[in-house]
Length: 122
Image (tube, rainbow, N blue to C red):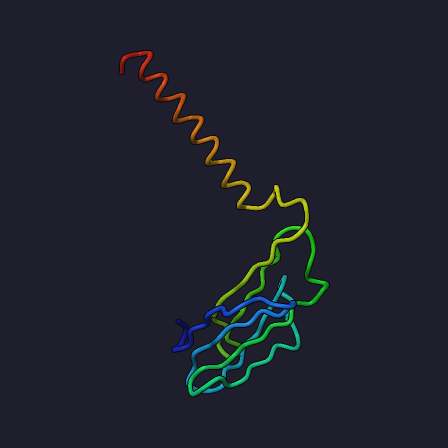
């Protein structure tokens, strides 16, 4: 929650990310991708104190790898939230793939250490 504002993801559908922002007055948000502002971001009232934020994802932002979008309060510059989209085949460089590889290596080291302890009687 930033300055009494809380952003929750609702869905990503048909190229539009949607979220609900809790704020007392109509918020002003900025959405950036690679430090470039996105246009066509809309904010509409849902009910008292709740606002629907819609972020159309530009086709130019879709490419191989992970693309991260930052949502911030336009007046204060504070981060309200973010979302990421993964696409393409070279996801082997993706952080999740690296974590999986580290887990596999850790498991291998644990087995080798246990075997060493059994063999040396430690």
